[in-house]
Image (tube, rainbow, N blue to C red; front, side, top):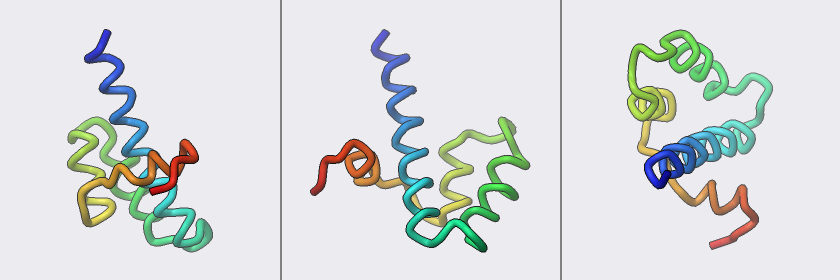
Length: 74
């Protein structure tokens, strides 16, 4: 059970980071949104999500956005 929970929570960390990066940049005409389409959606499961995330964002993920998503401010 704990391994499954960890994988769901890690997916939530990645999605919250990408979501807030795109929202903060502005969703219309966003380069990150275009990167998501061209990098993540186009490549699908051919690479690990961690690798695709770094390629899309140009950095490692940050957990602070998961806290923001849950209303916990640093």
